[in-house]
Length: 603
Image (cartoon, rainbow, N blue to C red):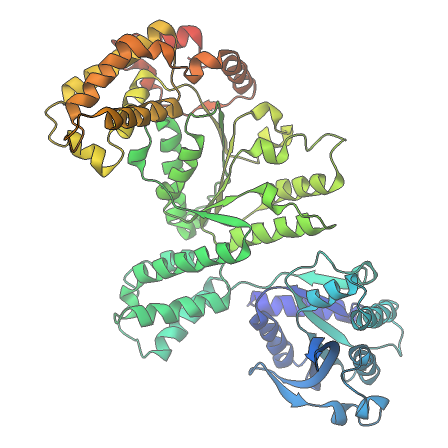
C-alpha cells in the first residue's frame, strides 16, 4: 500500500538528511504544516530522542530593541513548546547560565545542539518564521547574521559527510524564500506543504461528523462535488469550513453540500484578499452578453468536465488548460472572461502580472510562485489574465531584464505542466505583441478572436443595454412597443451600414447610456420618469440625423481593425461568434457592408 503524501514527504526529507543535507525549509503560512511534519517524523521513529524548538528575534526591553532567544522541548501531537530546557540540555556547556538576550545566544544554541546531536541520537531543531531571520540578516542584524553563519557552517560540514560532523536536522518554516542568503542555498532543500488528498479529505469529513455526533445517512450531494470544493485547501482551512458548516446549519452533514460550497467560496475569497496578489471577480450572467455564441458553447463543453472531475479523470480525460481570446478593444473579451465564472460555476480570480513585479532580487519570482500557489489552492477555479500582451510583451527580446525573463519562463512552465483544476482565460488586444511561445498548442487548448459584432449580435447588445437596469427594464416590461423598438434598432443599424460607422459592443453601451442621460436631462418639467416612446423616438432621430456625428470604433480605427484581422488569421484564431450570426436574415444591410469593409478570414 502506497504511503500517504505527507509520509512520502517526510521520507524524502529523511533520505536527504542521511545523504548530507541538514537544512530544510517548508514554504507555508500555516504553523500546523510544521507540526504535521514533526508528528510524522516522531511517529516513524526518525527522531525519538530530542525534538527541540528555537524561538528567536527582536523584542523590546526597557524601550530598547534587543535580540532574544529561547530553546524549548517540543511535544509532538500537541504542538506545544512550553518546556524551557536551557539548563537540562545545556547542563554541561557554557550556555547553562548564558544570557538568552545576547544577540549571539541563538547562534550559540544552534551550534551547541549540533555538537550534542549524533547519528545515533539525532536532534530535530524547529525554527519557525525563518524568513524573518533572512530579512534581518539582509539588514545586517548581528544576531541574524550569526545564526546564518552557524547554519551555513553546519550545512557545509554535513555536506562533506564528516563522520564526526553534526547530525542536526534543522526544519524551518518560511512563507517567503526570496531572501534566502546565498551562503545557505547550496545546503538547503525547499519543500511545498502537502495538501490533503481525496482519502485525507474524506477522513476530515468523517472526523467532523463524529465530533458532532452526526451519523445520519450518506452525503445527499455527490461526495466528489464536496471533494472538488475542498481540493487545493490546507487541512486547517477544511476543518474550519466544516466547523462553520455545523455552526451555520442544524441539518446533518448529508444535507450540507450547498452550505459547504458557500463557506468554501467565502474562505477562498479571503485567501485572495489576504495575499493581495489575486483579485476576486464577481462573475456576470449569460443574459449580459450579446454575442460570441461559438466561444460560449466551447466553454460550456469544457465546464461539463469540471462538474465531475473524478469521473472525467477515470475516463482518461485530461483537464482542459484554458483559452486565449484576442481581438480589437471593446468587443467583449473581458466580459467573456467574467462570464466563464458563471458557466463553470467556480471562483473567478484575476491575476495582474504587473502587481507581482517587485524591487528586490528574487521578489518577482516569489510573488509569481505565491500567486500560482494561491490559484492552485482555490482550484477548481477560473484564472483570468487580462491584457496579456502588456504583461509579457517582448519577453523573448534580449533587451529585457533577467527578472522579467525568469518570471515569463516560470509562468510558461506552469501553464505547460499544471495539473490542478485551474482553467486559464487570457485576453489580449494585440496578439502580435505576444511572444510566440504563448500562441502555440500546449499553452492554451483553443484561441478565439472577437471580430466586430454582426447585425444579429448588435441587436442583442442594444437590447441588453436598453434594458440593463431594473429602471430601464420597467419601461419595456409590458412588451407593447417591442416591434417598434426592434424597428428603431434596425433603423440605427441601417444608418451605420450606409456610413460604414460600424459598432463594437462598447460603442453601443456608450451610445445607449448617453441616450438615457440626454433624455433625462431634457425631460419636461413635472415628468417624473422617462417613457419607452421617448427612447424609441430618440433612436429613430439618432439614425436619421445624428449617427454620422458619432465616431464609432469601426470608423476611427479602420486601419487598426484590418491589421488585427490579418494577424488573427496568420495565428489561426477561431471566430468566437456562431457561424449562424452571419447567415441570419438581415434587412438592414449591416452584415453585407461589414463583410465588404472588413472581410473575415474564415467567411
